[in-house]
Image (tube, rainbow, N blue to C red):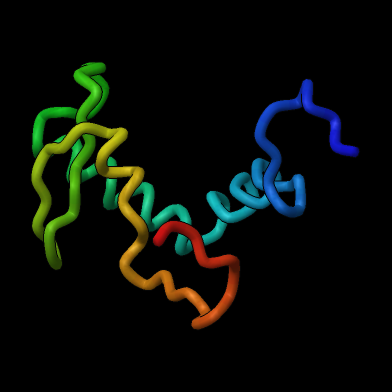
Length: 89
């Protein structure tokens, strides 16, 4: 039985280590740099307003609540047909 005191767990229990390693790669640095640049241009970088740059297209962005922006599924994510249990009606 899993330890319930530890809170939410990721499937492999190694998300933070994976993210730390990814952020050091060239692609990770490029993504962070472009996100920071967009936030600076929109005037929301570092001012603690709770807003993020929501990328609406190539080289386009608008401000949006961080929780809304980060909750949206990533564009390239695909799900295998028939995997998982059917829920709801």
